[in-house]
Every structure is written in structure tokens, then in C-alpha cells.
Image (cartoon, rainbow, N blue to C red; front, side, top):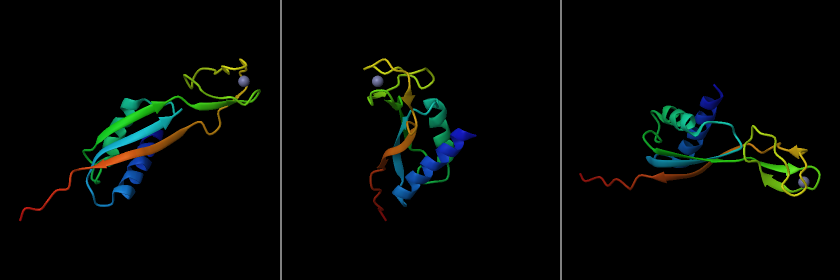
Length: 118
Ligand SMILES: [Zn+2]
């Protein structure tokens, strides 16, 4: 499933960045990717099982895709990636959406340092 591959990749990136530190929260920014945030959060929790990311709070920020008008070069955010986007400046519909999709591990936060009391 495409979403699962995506989740695995995000968790992998978080694990790489975290090293051995338990992660308390993960923030993921998705641009223009037609994926349900709830589905993705669930997938991330599954993918995180058994890693330092397990149990972390998952925050998904979904952003509309950034596209470029081929007529006038204006960059704008398409409100809905499934709808045809029209340029707000010239009204053109010949837009370049290549590279508009992006999934970024934006931030991770660690659990407060757990002091060993022994
Ligand atoms: Zn335009």
C-alpha cells in the first residue's frame, strides 16, 4: 500500500534523526499529496511499532500543492489537488504541478531526559 511505504519512510527518517532517544512527537508536513491525514497518522503509529518513535504523538500538517502557471509563471497553492487549478493572476489553467508533492519530516521532539535514579 502506498501509504504504508510512505509511513515507513517517515518513521525511518525519524529513527535516523533520533538515534537512541525516545521520541515524544513527530510532525509531518504533506504538500499536495492526496492522502487522508487520519489514515496517515494511523499508518505512522503502525510503522513506528518497535522503534524509538513508538508511542509518539503524530501530527500531520496537510498543505495544498504549490503549482506554477505556465502562462505567467505565478506560483500559487491549488486548493484541492483533485480539482483543476486556475491561476489567480491570469486565469490560465495550464499549470505545472510537477514536484508539487512533498512529504517532509518537519520536526521531532524527544521525551524529557529520563534520569537513572539508581
Ligand atoms: Zn497565470
